Amino acid sequence: MAAHSEDQLLTVEQAADRLGTGVRFPRRLIAERRIRFVRVGRHVRIPVSALDEFVAAGTVQPMHTEA
Image (cartoon, rainbow, N blue to C red; front, side, top):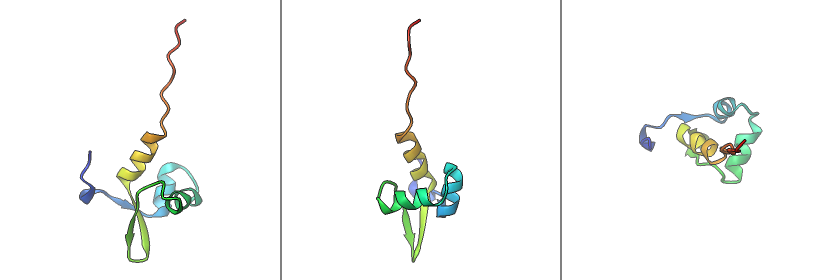
């Protein structure tokens, strides 16, 4: 696991771009406390590791079917 102190902080816009979504989606995740974030004064930043954790938590493994 990466050290959080060295984790790159992204703006909401950068996080949305990285997720391939509009800015409303990461803003909603923050408002609903579904993703870790950092307040820097009045600004909100999202650690890259938080995005990675969010994506990993939503990853669905394929089913293996026997043919």
